[in-house]
Amino acid sequence: MNHQVITGIFVTYEMNLGILKNLKNFLEGFPHSTAVVVDNSSRSYKKKHRLDKQLKALSNQIIYVNHEQNCRLRAYSKGIAYCNDGYVVFRTDDDYFDERSLAVQLDVTGWPDLAVTPHFYDGLFENPESWERPLETMVFKAALLHSLCPMQHTPGGDWRFLKKAFESYTPHRMNDAVLHKRPHGRSVA
Image: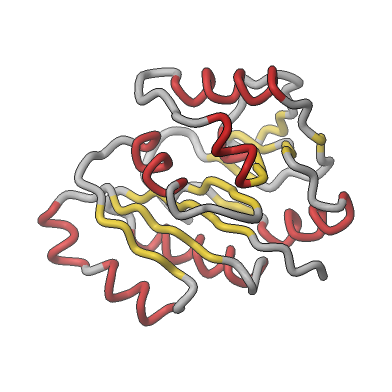
């Protein structure tokens, strides 16, 4: 397996079990990776559940970032500051990601600068041709990601960001779904 540098930016809001499960999965799929966890949880939740301490016990490959606003795109933007080389993926706490499949696909394709995977939404396979897709289906080379920033922290800001990415660079299309997106909600199986 190729040992490219990859960083996963994980955003969580009061869902420690989901983020821990996804982090373990990511670190197994990419053993030489770094994970940046941006915690959007309320102060009371952070104080009670101490995700920062749980992460220290899990791995020294994890950077914990305390974030005061519950805004996914602001949190992703904060995480991008920790990604200066290699590749970057975006992750949430309430979806499932097949990281081993992504690792194999990246090795087979030679780690393109921008890649996109199909995904499942509520169990239905989706493979849109356009930028109208979840940000979590993308793999960015860090330098390319930085050239596209900043993200707009407004409704639809993620799609505007992806539109800019698709207009700047043709993504390599991978075949296998990595993201299994749940309908909006907070349950984790």
